[in-house]
Image 1 (tube, rainbow, N blue to C red):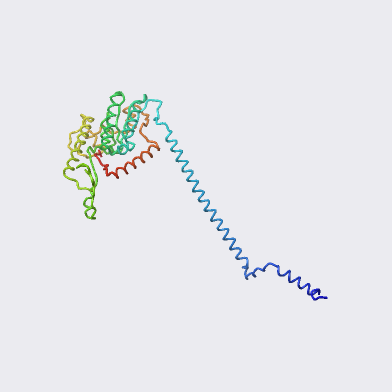
Image 2: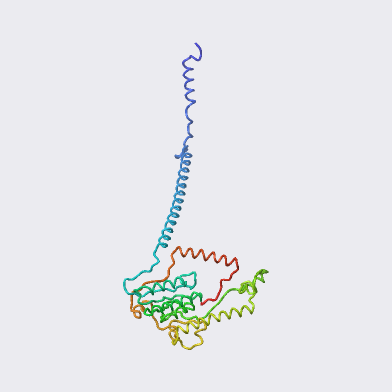
Length: 349
């Protein structure tokens, strides 16, 4: 009988074969409950932590994109509503006082532009229920051209609608170009602490010639025309140009004085300070004849016009117009800078 056929040796071979395919025995656990499963726990914890961080990151980006989407949706809705809101003013069913606000700097780009204010004035006078018009005034002045256009339109409307009174009510400030408008009204009402006056004209700017010489910078300005570089901030101001600018300011100032004298005829007190560019409180303005009495929009509507209900006809540009205007103004400024065009001119401020 062969040795391989011996029962004892055969059993030992089978046991050895089976033992060779058993899985490896994990390391013995350390005393105190550690053991070989510690590395498995660490791997699982790291995987779980990475999953949490990834979910947080995904959630944050999701919130961000949702907010952006909502923001665009809200902006689009506002633009749509603003564009499609009728331009017509609120109309009262009964007799009322129409209010047109002159607020901020008077210029072609702002709320107090001749285009917007004149449209509001026409709508106010044309309303069949308007018993009287009040100009609510809060402005430091601005462009003499824009102020002149509004002033002339006020006079035209007053002549066209002689039975509809127009009064100016000063709240905070009515200076320079704003006062140019106020004198076109039947009467001017103020608060005792209002700032009124500043009947003058200015043209301002900066000169950097000395600074450029100190830092060694040369200004290279090429012009076609002897006076094309007039009032350039980086070139010396000659006596000829200074005299020319002063004559122009005096001319505009005399136009301003003539308008005030005509509008306040018989009411102005004789004083050399009135047309000097100074301004006064409302109480002092009444003493000088620059204003007629103290009053507010409500008191004038109630006690003077006798129509207590007020309707606001003030010009308010919608969002689309404001954005378009701002973009247009920015482009215009960029073009002006590239052509070295000075934007400073006579201002009633």
